[in-house]
Length: 371
Ligand code: ADP
Ligand code: MG
Image 1 (cartoon, rainbow, N blue to C red):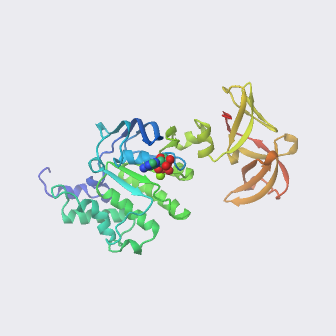
Image 2: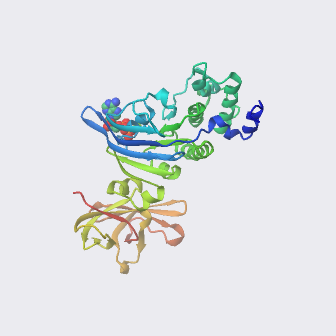
Image 3: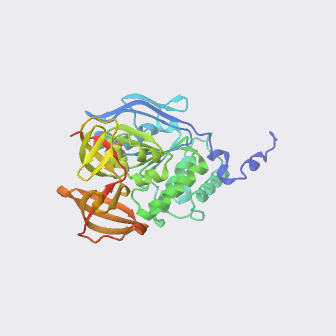
């Protein structure tokens, strides 16, 4: 078989699994990475290992250092100190072209004067002659990628003839065309409307599962990160506050920031005494926490309407909005505190705006109030 010139044909029977599209995935690791702009620490000591073939979301608010971290992984910028490794290799000072990374940015960086097919082939076309695949190979690869991103038949179009979502599919195909070791996406769906974003997210997951390339996806959208990623690294002020699977970051937030940002939880002020959090009308276990002022982070579905005799936090209903199987209750408690509660529609008689009700806490995470 070794000298059978048709051997490659047997291998490429499954289009998605052509050897060129599936290099063995590698790990990426960052050790004590720091980056300043002037006196401002954009990255303040980042340690992170992305497992081979993993799809990791880098989630954080605007200005938390996500793009800076992605640029250091890409080799578009370099850390002041610390180390970046791809597999066993130290690439800290290697330039982007030496690292074999593919990128997709929020702003479509497609070449407007080139067809879709030319855009996708670009990374292959500009390779030095010795490394460049033959014309036939490049055309075959473009065809495989068009099918992978579900743009079969649109290779002859120009970017201006595509929707925003289609352009981002082209950008993704172009990034994959050079068989990157690592795929990096910086808020790639940020400019698209909600429904397109949601379907592209699922597409990206499918494409990731087909190619197996180690992928880092930057977003400030909690739902997007939770929906898409194997694990989520939560960045705040240039530091990773937590790294874990979607369940772990929701159910066991490592900090008040994570509890508030990822779960979009209500914040209820109170007091911890002897391992019990107390706020007027409700308590929560807070074992291990020192006595003092504290904040409970309570997700909307952990606030449940109860009969007045059962206690609960006294609130007034402001707005009642059905969302799918849920009824979303926007309520106001004492001192203007707004509380969002989400209850199953089948479980409640919808309250009327203006009605006083009681909300019990069925769960939540308590952290000391930093003051
Ligand atoms: P994110 O992508 O999470 O919104 P960035 O990584 O772009 O955040 O930026 C992190 C912080 O570093 C921000 O406060 C930003 O203003 C600052 N920053 C980023 N790039 C530069 C730069 N080239 N010069 C000066 N400050 C920068
Ligand atoms: Mg950014």
